[in-house]
Image (cartoon, rainbow, N blue to C red):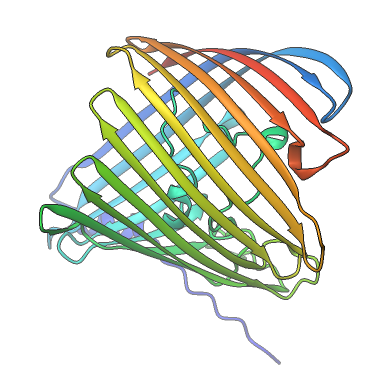
Length: 336
């Protein structure tokens, strides 16, 4: 008979026990947003459509210092109906770096999926506007471990390095207790992320490898990304390349992108971005390319922000039979 042993680390409880003489800082933040979207094309249906929307997100954070000077912290972010969107527990040792346990969508490799400068959102924001090559470590989210080294300085520049490991890549993370969820047939994954800063230029790089024994699992494969962003006063310019290989899914994806953002003043910003995403099926003699352009504007008034964007997509989701999508969105948000 096989026995499955569970090892659970209750970091928060350990921190409370070890911080008997130290205060624990707790904070709550969030935002509420209402929006209106209108679009046309033949991605999901032919013709024009429009809709209102609203949502609220709340984030809870807590941290405390151990007797040896280390810091234990936890963050939990929720969306509508308090659905958990991100959760992690971390131990910061200072000079030796940070160890973070990621419950949902918090792997270090996910942080740099798209860092191109924009006034509001990524151009790669939803299904019709999806650049499918931009999937850095998709499976390394729920139930992964991150090791984040301290920032290193060299020759006037900085260097950051982080690594992730997920023994259940693509599966759901679990809660300590009666059962820690395991997805049988889902393999493991790892990722490495680096950032180099030198003056106004910052270069980001990431590599992830995720394996799966599921025959049709598109997560199985490798992801590579490199991006560069230059901040020149009120103007920021960015460019990047992404590559995703599906060992089991049967496709290779390559994406190139660029964007320019301009801060008119402290409250008003504008941006323009382009993405070109190409899908090539294994063994195919031709490829399908999705082209995305995005124009955005954002204006802030203290805790209130008004934002708008126009996104146009050719061959959405790499499908020639759905050859157009045009969307305009307006949003008003309040932060607290």
